[in-house]
Length: 265
Image (tube, rainbow, N blue to C red; front, side, top):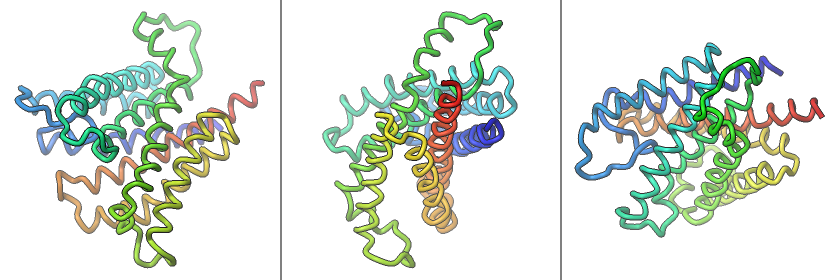
């Protein structure tokens, strides 16, 4: 099981690193990490600093150097960025804050924050490690990691139902059947799997199926889009592909963590 967990952690870190890395080149925050607040000073500096911190955390997790602490701090950073960056922006400045679609970019950060806490929970606790008050507080958020992730999955599923005509063109033309059907079906799967994980209904199976589904989308939708338009909209297609990898890894680790808990009961 530990080998599978390592693979999942690596996939999550590769996905997250791939999402933030373009910020070095475009000298601004990606749409998924911080909104375009007007008149924000030193944007390029803060975007580069944020990218550097995230990459260091990912390296620590992959090579298991204070990995649990790194994952906790990463989750805390992403959660703070979302709560104090995206939420106020959507409430105060976004022109269509009452539309779910305008929250879509920020919801990825919430899911990634949950994923970081899921990664932290996949590491064993070292009782001999002295912990600061900050780390002790962040550890209390580990059980909420799947919840943060699944809120995004459920809301993305609802988006598939609300914005079917805008999402359905993403269905590959070679897939048999109606694109609208597959869009609605995907939305139902996202909602169902997210709720199943949160409420513990066949949690391991639901998480595994969610991981497989998103991984399939990576190869059938996101990679072809990345090849077709790699650098458009600040490499948005590439960032979306890496986010699919990260989301698939989060769901997989949720399943692995659930398996580990069941063996200890």
